[in-house]
Image (tube, rainbow, N blue to C red; front, top):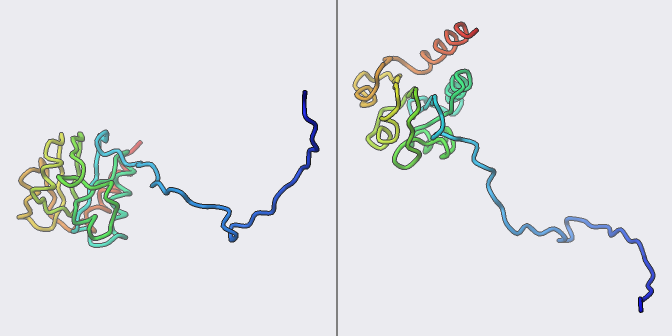
Length: 158
């Protein structure tokens, strides 16, 4: 035997201030950086000098279809998130091309990128340890060198 009841349609008025919504858990957004799979990595270090100047790293990596990497010093300075950190306390990488910009070349950083196919180092200190693992070196200020590389690369693209 079925029961009979009265159907009443009701739309409650809910206001967030009344505590109807309760956040149970927060999860960070999915990691979008994939340094391990990158064929090209353009990485910046403390020698970049500022978060604003670090945008040159982003620009070159984007132009080349690569990922943005960083040294621990750049992460600690707040130039970029830890997801981009290369080295013993970050990610170990083996891209075909690794461009180290303003990275001195600490043992911890080098351990995470020395197996790259080709390494290009840009640093204003000719005695920076990064040059000992680099296949090619550019001695100069990254703030001057990177805009030249970006302009030249744009000109070469078809």
